[in-house]
Image 1 (cartoon, rainbow, N blue to C red):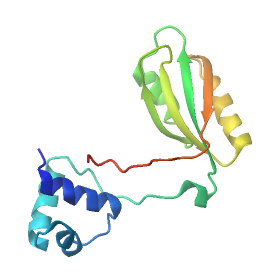
Image 2 (cartoon, rainbow, N blue to C red; image 1 turned 180 degrees about the horizontal axis):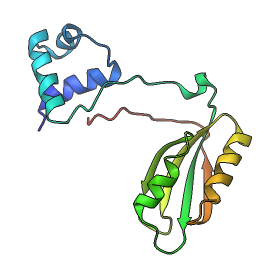
Image 3 (cartoon, rainbow, N blue to C red; image 1 turned 90 degrees about the vertical axis):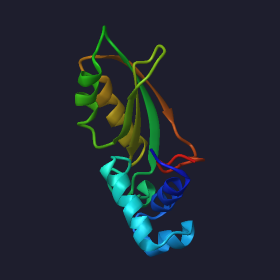
Image 4 (cartoon, rainbow, N blue to C red; image 1 turned 180 degrees about the vertical axis):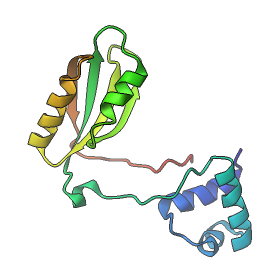
Length: 148
């Protein structure tokens, strides 16, 4: 369980995972050793699973983004869906959802032709009956995985 200070530390780390304990402490009014103890505890508790870098996909040449709804034949298990979509490096996220659609995947591609190829490959998976794609025009809000 995290408290307000832990949440503040998490917000700083989400903005800059390379921040030092002293830099974090200056922003949350704690000493560097106190920040380190809290970060260590949150790592031990599984709140913090690791530290990473946030990339700009467009700067790396991945300029096109879409959400692809996948409709499955019969009853397809989440494990089968996961095994299939994990093979695609273009798939950023994949989630089973409620409603008519079974699976929604977020896809990043170099351009529209690349996106079309990915959607065609997804549609060819044996359990897929059809797909529906929505292309992202502008990403308006992107938040790190930190609670407010």
